[in-house]
Image 1 (cartoon, helix red, strand yellow):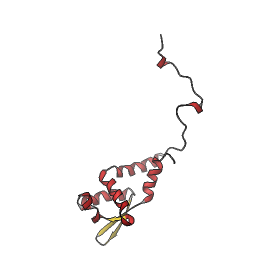
Image 2 (cartoon, one colour; image 1 turned 60 degrees about the vertical axis):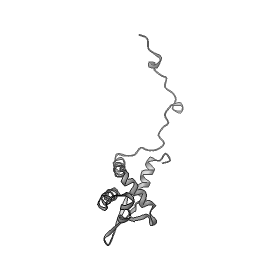
Image 3 (spheres, rainbow, N blue to C red; image 1 turned 180 degrees about the vertical axis):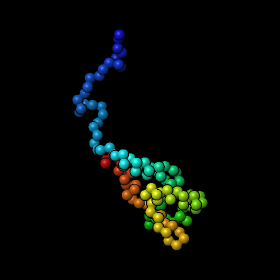
Image 4 (tube, one colour; image 1 turned 90 degrees about the vertical axis):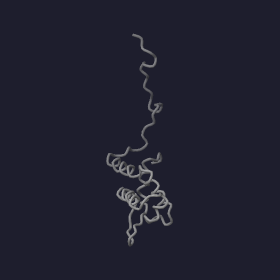
Length: 121
């Protein structure tokens, strides 16, 4: 039987000549992956991504739910639902002041995500 050139065994290359570079860092653990999956799931919605952007860009780094409804064109209950998901995921903190709730970004939440996605880790 004749073997085609594509099917012939290739010689093993020394590690320094291999096509794949060795790992430069440790892969994330199962626990870290579960935590990040929850964070990504919370962010995997266009409204929630806009909310994160809006709160982060807001003066003082916090915003009242009443300030977020008009720019998004959504009702207060809908915005509050999305904000609740972001608080549960640890992306925002919530501070109740009278009848209004103010939301602020938790910087370490997005920093941990950036660290995993960064090639410089």
